[in-house]
Length: 298
Image 1: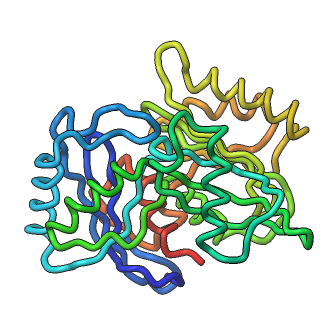
Image 2 (image 1 turned 180 degrees about the vertical axis):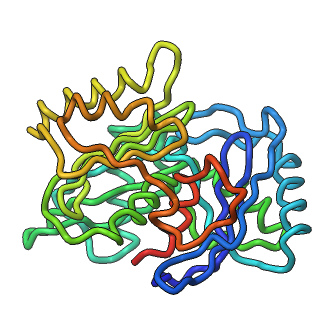
Image 3 (image 1 turned 30 degrees about the horizontal axis):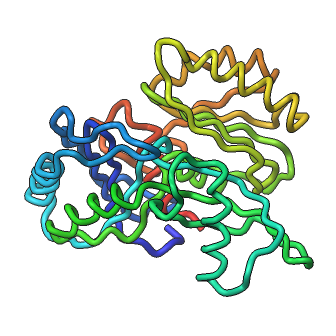
């Protein structure tokens, strides 16, 4: 596991908390153990950008049970659903060298794309490319500061220091790419969940397009994929992909749609391809546990 992070990874959703402990194997990471802890209904309530933690006691009780069952440890990485973030690829006319000034510029760039003041967001970014003129393209992650701070406070009260907060989908992609040969070709990634899904296009290592959408009876994943396909053909001039990776427990249902829209081979994300070993009783969590392995990629 090249990146130096604690072996414990937490995945938090509106209805549950997943804890996974990873270890080193001969050729890759091992899932030593994993267990899900249910949260009470209404623990999180819908809000702008990220849901709000409305019932701190429910999360605190899940963390208490987790700690009682897993012994003494004090640091963890935390992965959250992609839909709890706004993920933007932003082109800036200039990006200052000083970190604080650069962050101010990035935060200001979000004003025209988000429905709330950017001061209410916790923002992080990575530089994708930078020109000699100073112009830069950056990948920006933002989430509600109040939501993240409250979650961190609950974990801290249980003696757990959260050292990393990132989206699940991007870490699934980290796990995929670390095992691929270098390429400049276009690749498609789709992560399907019950209530939302993420679509991303990468040209080589560079993201060209990332979008996370909530689903409803009036907005199905099949419809969203077809809309995204039209957008990608029109805006990015992408007709097909070298590979299309699909993750999620319900992903099989969209394989045919993806194959027909992009005339591309579709490859499901299976945990056995990314973890050297995992407990035999783990089922239905291939995407999420693959994301846990992605935390440790370079």
